[in-house]
Structures are given as C-alpha cells and as structure tokens.
Length: 170
View (cartoon, rainbow, N blue to C red):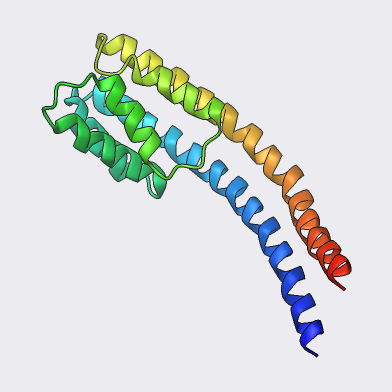
C-alpha cells in the first residue's frame, strides 16, 4: 500500500512540474498583454496629458494589474528618488526586480524602450512607446502559440517523467 501511495505521489509530482511549466507560459502571455496595455496608457499620459514621467508611470500602474502593475509602480517610485541615476538604469533595474515572466527577447525590447523614455522629446517617446507596444503584442501572439503548442507537450512530459521515475524506482 505504501509503495502504491509513493508511486502515485511521484507521478503527481511529475504532472505538477508539467503544469507549472504550462502556468509559466500562460503567465508570460498575460504579462506581455498587460505590459502592452501599460505602455499604451504611458503613451497617452506622456503624449496628451504631458504628465511628468513618474506620474505617467503611476497612471500606467493603475491601468494594469499583476506583475506589470508592480513593474510600473516600482519604476515610478525609483524615478522619484533623487539618487542621480539615469532613467534607463532605473527602468532596467525595475525590470529585473519585478516578477514578470519574460524571455530574453521580451526584456531586450523593453530595455531599448528605457533608453528613450525621459531622454528625448515627446514625439520620439510616443513613437518608441507605439513601437514597443506593437512589438509586445507580436511577442504575445507568438507566446500564445507557444502556450497552445507546448502546453500539452509539457503536461504529457511531466506525466511521462513521473511514470518513468516510478518504473525505475520499482
């Protein structure tokens, strides 16, 4: 009976590992969408209201939820602190410190945007925000395809790994 229970727990562990990978893929799709929506809000705040950058970041944080809201909030807080750092560094550090589920290409796109914000005129910032939001939406579409394609694969691999471990242990 104990062996059967142990085998069931090992299989359940393998399945849960597969489901965690699926959840990460799903979270990436959500985070990319929320970031794109936040950049749209940031564009409106900077382009139309002509709000200062920390206020515009606060507006973006209020427009989204989840890790993207945490990112914009953290960035706004750090932009207000007078430590003499360039906004590009603040943006990159906030990106690294936030719990966003991003791949390297996602981060690279956002880091390029950080070099433009707070540094150039309003039109340049608006164009950079539009391009970054469009890029994030493209990446979101690719991530959704990955989720639907790889989601089942990760679930099956997790279950298969659990079954293989049980066979090897018995």
